[in-house]
Structure formats: structure tokens, C-alpha cells
Picture 1 (spheres, rainbow, N blue to C red):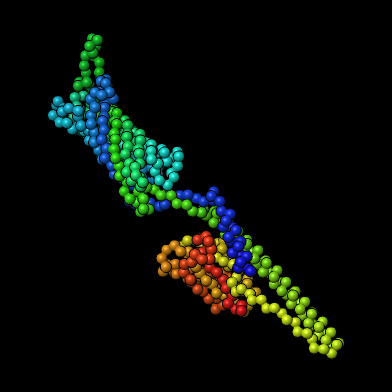
Picture 2 (tube, rainbow, N blue to C red):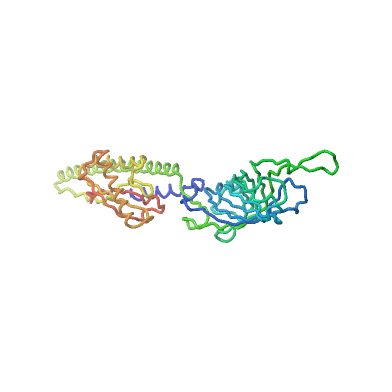
Length: 410
């Protein structure tokens, strides 16, 4: 009855779990998880030119390699080559310059709307970065000095579409602007005479350009079996502690019931003794043999109601579990002849060999606590590791447990 009472109480406690008590987090990422590579191409136009928007557009091509450290933040290395729309009059080259940039990426969709375990079909990200630009040709415009390196920074918005069932591929459109942070002005080359005035005017030195790129990205496979971050669900430590407290409270109630049952049995024994005495007196008076009182013998179960629950992969005893061990110690002190068997179990995760070792370690940890903390003689306690099981309780967490048996009860 005690075992059935304890198991029923544990099942009721487990069924009170609500969805709000579950916590959601990301599975851990390894060093080379969430890495991607992509290529892009597009057009660039200097912001200081007064021609129409379709004039003097310079083609671009590039490659980008990056890593997402969270579903929101990442870093990337970007290399871009700029071409003249016609060969440079001075140098004769179609190559205008190249960039090498370190870019920071911020996924606004995941930041403001949360990450649901896989990328959305459509996402918006912001890009900001610093880099170096080398100019080979000005394409006919008076701008930065040739064959020199200049510091630049870049701001852009990335409009991305994630493709396929695994969302390993991504295409994007990326409008942005790039600023040159260093470089010298050459007024002698920028001067011209305004057609409507008799004074000199100057072009502004070009310090920025608008860019429009389109690209395709491939995200490499991760250790979690996907090409992206993966969520997991679990129970928070606060809830586990609360559940342990409930279990310990129920175990205390079982112990109180045991005490009450013991007192009732003692009272029954006293009444039976009085009955036998009265029968003997009556038989003597009637010169008759006393009627034998037939007592029904009820077999007691040897399992004690207390149990110690462990965390996954651990054989150390949580502080909250010592309440159960203390109850067992009191039982052993109240029953001087009792012999105790401690059985350790593991939940089914992991290999058979590891589960066998951890079940033995859990049983041994409980025995050491009884011997060292509560001074129960070691020769009164035996241990047994029974490996993994999923038969004791429906909840996997409850199968990481140590049980107690009084081996002297027949």
C-alpha cells in the first residue's frame, strides 16, 4: 500500500506541469556550426555625381564568408571588386578598386519577433562594417588618389529569402551605402568654371557611393543535424526544485501514515492480548480450554517509500534529496536489526555501459551519505546498480533514482 500511495502521489504531481513551466533555449553550437559562404553581384554609383540615376553605374562582384553566433548576431568577411563602366582614360583599366570589409549582421526579424526553432521564409537584417578600399582608377571622375588604401564603413539592409525544407540556401537583395573615411582632396583636379558665373566653383570630393547587391548563400550543416540553430524544450531548475519539495512533502506524509499504522497495530496487539486474557479467565471459570485467537498475518512490502532523484548524468546528491535519506536513516535507527538494500537506476539516455556505471555510482553515493552523515553501519547496507530503466515512472526524470528495500522483512 505504501508503494502504491507514493507512486500515485508522484503521478499526480507530474500531471500538474503546465506549458508555462517549460523553458525553451538553443541547443549548444560547436566552433564550426552556423558557418555560411555566398557570392554576390550588383551596381555602385557615386553620390556626388549629378547625372541621372542610370548614368555611371559601376558593376560589382564579391564573395562573403560568415558565421552566426546567435539567431540575431553574426560576423562576416566580405571581399568586393568594383569595375568601371568603361575603361579609365588615364590607366586603360576596367578595374576601379576593391574592398575588404569586416561586417556585423543583426537579424531584426529574430530580434523583435523571436526565434521559433528555424529561420522564417523572409527575414530582414541590418549590416554595419569597417574595411579598406584600394582605388586603381577613378573611372573618369575626380575622387580619391590612385593606388592607395582608404578606410571605409558600410551600412546596408539585407532582405533575405530562405529556401527549401532545410532552409540551407538563401537569396537576398541588399541596398546600402559606403563611406570613405580617409583620403586627400585634390582641388587642382576638381576645379572647373561654371557656365553661368564668372567665378570658380568646385565639385565636392566623392566620399560615398550607393550600392545595390543581390546574392546567394549556402549555410553549411551543423552538429545538431540541421543547417540552422535548433531549439530544445526542458524544465527549469526552479520547477525541478519545486517538484522535489513536493515529493519530499508527500514522502513525509507517507512516513506519518506509517507511524499511525504502527500505533494502530500496537493498539490491536494490546486488545488481542486483553482478549486472550479474558478468554483464559472465562475458560478457567468454566473448566474449558481457552479458545485460540486466529490472527491473520499480513505480509508487509519490503520497499520503503523514500526515494532519491538525481539530475541527468549525475551521481551527486542534490541538497533537497537529503530529506529522503534522513527518513531512511531514522528508520534504520528505529529498527536495529534491519538490513538495507539500495538500488540505483538510470534513465534510458546514453549507452548501456555508462548507464550501468552511473546506476552503481548513485546507489553508492546514497550508501556513503547514510554511513558518513547519519552514522549507519556500513555492514547493514548493500547496494545494487540496475542500469537504465523506463518502467518505474512515466516521466524520464523520475527514473534517475535510488530506491530502498528492507531485506529483513519477510
